[in-house]
Length: 304
Image 1: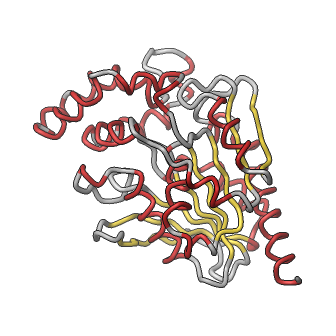
Image 2: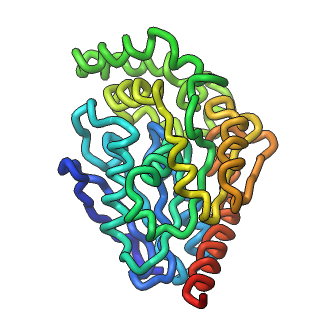
Image 3: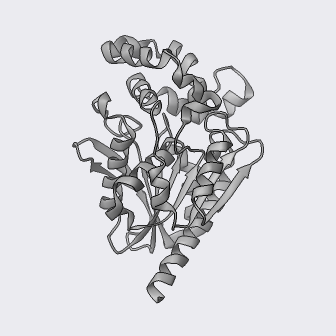
């Protein structure tokens, strides 16, 4: 498939979004991956490895970092909202795909929320999309069940205020603050085998700015992107969640699946929130099936 190509895509407000492309530009299907809260594009490393091996030159894989994450630039904290992230995704899709192509969008957690926000706001670009994967995510009501209920507490706006007023001090205190925030973002804080097994995940989370974290946690309190489900209803879809996910409990995925009649639904026993890292082969295989479903739909539309 050749070496990965790194590039910068500029968002609507000029923020530099880091993008990695793997595969030929003329591949019949492009797959765009949108990572979760406090992670970065490297969260999809197992899927990159598996899909390059399984699908070869039939796909081009596109990974990017959300603003304020990974190699992408930081931005005004006021822009850390789902509508703005949707605009960033729109910029990535329009810059890395062509209008006549059909792409597949895959999102984990906040990445799935971003896809839903994109679907509701960018109908013209959505015409390029032939399938969606929504992994361990939520359309609305993140604060109604599971550990998301902590979003209702005064701690979130207070952390946001502290990080906005004194980012240097707040950043220095992140090692302490992460013990309060960690349960919301799926990182074990105890020195136990589970924490050691999630070393890669832990590193990505702790490298994320406290300003980014608190701004997005505040945005999640009023998150409602159910309008995006109607826009995606005609597409092949993957909806996956672990039955031990306490961040976005499986009830959220059930609601999403009920709105997407062409979805393959995976309930993974014993798996938590970081499904693409906990069950990488299972998720890679499911994405492969989604790519085939999207390709079949495209061929059917061409032949009709």
